[in-house]
Image 1 (tube, rainbow, N blue to C red):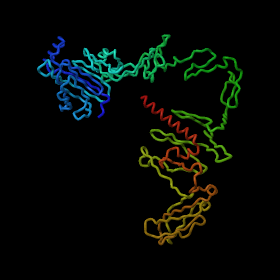
Image 2 (image 1 turned 135 degrees about the vertical axis):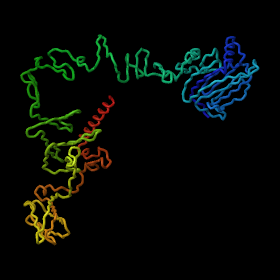
Image 3 (image 1 turned 60 degrees about the vertical axis):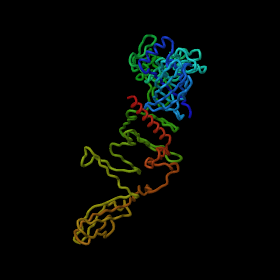
Image 4 (image 1 turned 90 degrees about the horizontal axis):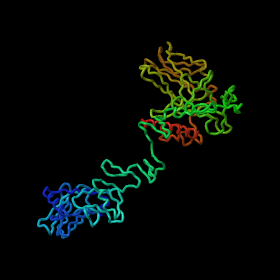
Length: 551
C-alpha cells in the first residue's frame, strides 16, 4: 500500500493523572528521569511517526485505537528503545483520516514498574499541515535537544510558512508555538489567518521596492489593484490638497478658457472653437449638405432637403436610442416616404424593412399602425386575424377571429330567401358580379323544415333561381366566385413556388422547425443587416444584465 503523501497530525499529549504531573515536574526540575515516559521524544516524519525513549528503556509497546475504542494497531512488546509506526493498521493498510488515541508502554531499567504514556493524534490526508503539542521533545530528525522542533533532514525544508535550513533549526519552535501552519509562504505575499485559524497567503503582495499589489503578483506602481476601488467616504485627496468627493460633480471636470473656446468640457457642454471670436476664418467651404459660411452673420446649418449618397453596404444614416424613440418624423402630406431603388441586375430594393426587437418580456412589433392602412399591391403573411375588444367583457378581454384562406382569389356572397307558392325564388346579385367573378360555386341549406332545394337556373345576368319541392320554404344560399378583374388577372397569387436559390435551406419561421435564427430567409437576403440587428439585441441584453448586477 502506498504511504499517505500528505497529512496533518495534531498530537495532543495529556497526562493520566495529577500524580503523574507532579512526578514529571519533579523529574524535570532535577533533570533526572526515574520514569522513562518523561524522556520519550515524538518525531514526526512524512508518512511516519516515531517514538524514541532513553537508552535505558528495555521494552516498548505502542497501541493505537480509533475514536470508537477499537484497536487499530499493536506493535507488540519490542526490546528496543524506539518504535517507528508507518500510520498503518494491523493488516498493513493506510489508516483513514480521523481522531485516534494511543498508549505507549515503557519498561525502563531504572524503574520496576512499566510507565504508560497516553495521548491523541489527528490524521488528515491531503494536506502538509503540522500542529504538534507535547510534554516531551517534538521534532523531525533523529537527534533532538531541549524540546525544539528541528528540521534538518534535507538541506532546506518548508515548515510553518517559513523555509528553514540546517542551521536555522532553533527558529522552528517559534513557527509552531500555538500556530496552525499551512503550506509554504509565497515570497512577497502578505499572510493571513483563514476561518480555521490556518496561516495562508492573502491577495496582497509587496515587492522588494515596496510596491503594493492587491490581486496582482507583480505590482507595477506604488499601488496596483486588479479590480474596482470603492471609497465609502472621504473621496480622493490630490497633492495640491484638493479633495474630490464624487465623479458626478460637474464642476470638477469643467475647463476654464477664454473667448476663443465655447463650452466647459462636460458632456452637457462639450468644448468647441469660437470661430467668430478668433476672426481667423471669413467663411467655411462645404458641399451642398450644409448651409451658411460659419460666420456670425451666416452660421453653419444643415441644408434642406438633405441629400446623402452612399454606395457601400453600410447604412447611410444610423439612428439609435436605447431608451426612447430613435426617430420622430412629421409631415403635412407624408411623414416618411420610403422608396426602394431600382436595380440593373436582380430584384429592386425594399422600401421599408422592419424587424421586431426581443426582450425578456416578449418580442416587440415589426410595425404598428394606429389608423387605416392601405396596400395597393399583394399582401403576404404567415397568418391573420381581427382583434377587437371582447363584446362580453370589453374592458378586460380581447377577441380574435382568424382570416378565411383559400388557394384562389375568391369572393363569397350569401343570403336567405323564401320560395313563393310555386316553390320558386330568384336571387339577384350585384350588377358587377359577373364582370368581377368566374367559376361560380353554389351551396343551399333549407331552414325550419324538411324539404328539398335545388339551383333551378345558374347565374345569368347577375341572378339565379332556387326551386323547392314545396312552397314557402326558407333557404340559406352561398355563392363563391374567383376574381377575374384586370388586377387579379395580372397578379394572380401562385399557390406553390420554389424558393429562390439563395433562400433555399432557409425558413420564414425557423423557430417552428427548431432551427436557429440565422436560418431565417432574412439572413439569406441581407446577412449584414441581420448581423447588426443581432449585435444590437445582444448589446441591449448585456446592458440589462449589468443593470441587474449593479442592483
